[in-house]
Image (tube, rainbow, N blue to C red; front, side, top):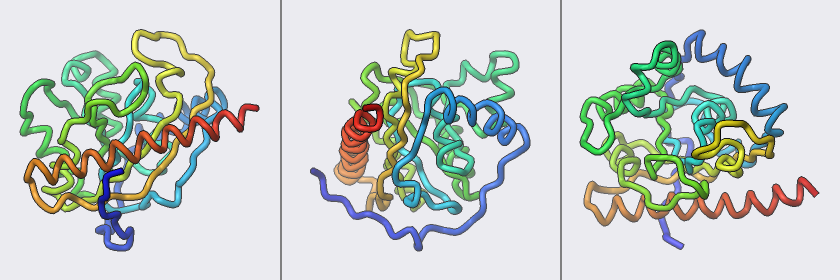
Length: 229
């Protein structure tokens, strides 16, 4: 396993993030019943989440449900990058923008998205990043990109690995109906920013996140199985 220095939560810059009315409305009236009643969700490691201060949430991505569930479970607003095409869809574009999402163009160096991410971090938001960039059929971290580590270094902000167990089974790719399978959120320990922008340092930080998230997923599958039986 890759050795990488965890961060002391007491060193995280303390700013209180602000969420708007629409974000809270979606959180309490849509995500709450979905997560607690339909998906029987529960969380492990919630004490690892700093309740204020900038942080980068790094997670596996197996479902479109991942962003709202993470924001609900972690108890603070999280700004996620979303593909720019979504913002041109009537109602949906306005809704996800109001919930903190911001557009990114796939397949290129989107400087505007990077500037937006840094601005949100400066305001004390949590930024959510899925390292694979798109939903994975197996729900794991498979081929992570270096964007989270690069943003972590440039903003001197720690990364928090999070594993979402069964997200790809509840509503994965090419799946249009919700399956009522139990969801578990496993929260790891924050990882300090890479010391430089050298590719080796970025790759080490990214690998540390990948290994910790996949380990959390494996542990979550075992505990989830015991919970069901």
